[in-house]
Image 1 (cartoon, one colour):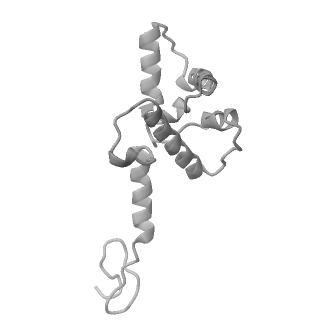
Image 2 (cartoon, rainbow, N blue to C red):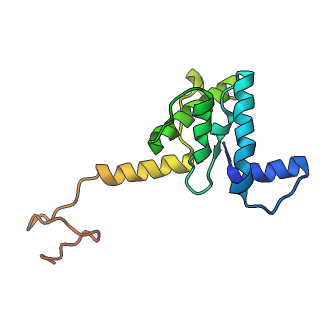
Image 3 (cartoon, rainbow, N blue to C red):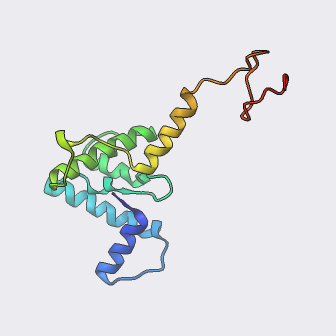
Length: 147
């Protein structure tokens, strides 16, 4: 995977074309061309490899991947991320990346996976309760009523 920022730096470095225009104003049309060219060649959608630095998610332009493939839009954000994870694995397999035994499995970007796991840990963890008065404990773990 690569972030939009790193990809933009790489594009400017390799082409020698520099711009002070904000990234989000020019990267989309370029990635749109990549989506269409990959589809034309029969390659998996390379743009699934590009994620945001801050949250590890694909951008809103990922909808073009679905449109070019003739698939309906995916409104649910996490469903879109899992679609992109499958597309990334298809890219790795298609272009001969080194994969773990068994061929690998779709994976969210590490930053996003970490956020999902933290959220899951908060939801799955039952609230602590005071042994004396059976009131839910505050985040300090010390009962306000009994201490």
